[in-house]
Length: 306
Image (tube, rainbow, N blue to C red):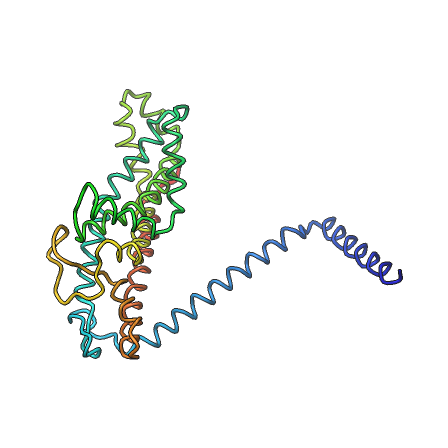
């Protein structure tokens, strides 16, 4: 009885203290939620910094010219390089770019400017786009293997098959980002253009898209940043773990990418190959940071105030 009485007194005192803080203009629940968010951000930043420091220390000895100019080797890790994987990554990312941007931006324009929200098929498209954005990447790898490599298209294990697989994975991101950018254009701009006699397409192409360009470009670069770091779907559609020659192009020949090559080196028991994998990770992280920095710079450069 005495213990329960003390507990009630403590609870009443806490409530009185909280009510006193609220009367003074202090939001107790809001401040607590803010502290929890700050704690989560600090944990994430500390873990990321720890990982980057570890990878940098481990891979720094192999950051040399051979890393970019030599072929991979299973016998001599000191002279082994990432040249075929770097060229293969360029091919695959180029294929992703030329397929994702036209389809993604066109879909966003249709859904925002032309689609009738009352039609069931438009609602069905929007629901599927939202759901596809959360599908694991390995699922897209299975779909790419079934329909692009071996299915009706039958492209085989070529770089463009990897591009189309990654395109399916990042397409929802491009569509959602482009829709948000187009939606952010003031409606008065559209009304003024239509009021002056411009057609719907002239309004979209000459007024809406130039204003939405920074957001569309930012979403595209962020989607490319996600695609360049994927490994699992590319393993299923032909990105081999060891290639000693340069890829012949998008539509023929074997290929590899940096993420798959890093995975292959990291699985080897020799410490020298793990150092090589860490050096490749540094290059990949630097490339991702560069792409994100470009996205931020372009958004700030071309953004307009209305």
